[in-house]
Image 1 (cartoon, rainbow, N blue to C red):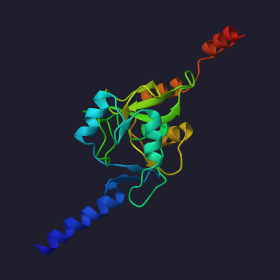
Image 2: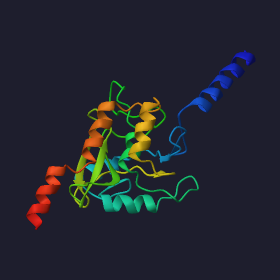
Image 3: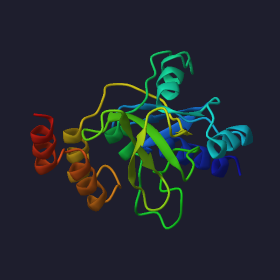
Length: 201
């Protein structure tokens, strides 16, 4: 019996070592991207704040969200920041059959929209949000208007190029459609830029 219990414990240990994301004590370490995520649960009061459009703990407008992450101390670390849109996209798993469409290992993500630090190139007073519900998706929202969930991160910042390489290597589960959509939305349409330039002259 002891031998069987020891074998189960050993298999569990190796399973943890080989896991892409390990979440413990309110933090999740992604061994693929090298990022460390806040992974604390949401309270009923935060859900109310989300629905009522108020700043409260892990919910708020983008300005509040940036300040919240910059002031967060968790697990002995105090160098957290609001993630960019490419970093949040690495957490989407479109292969899941039900919401939230989140990678294995992350324990506390809602099927709602989350703020990113990425500014819209078309509307500079808007920033992008990422959803883990409705098969993922992105929306540009007014920084001081929308109130959404907040998830902080620490580590070297990822770029769109990094995201593409991770997808090509099969290390992330976000769909190619999602990445193509993201690529399109991050570019300012040339004709729109030209029209704005002509109108401003």
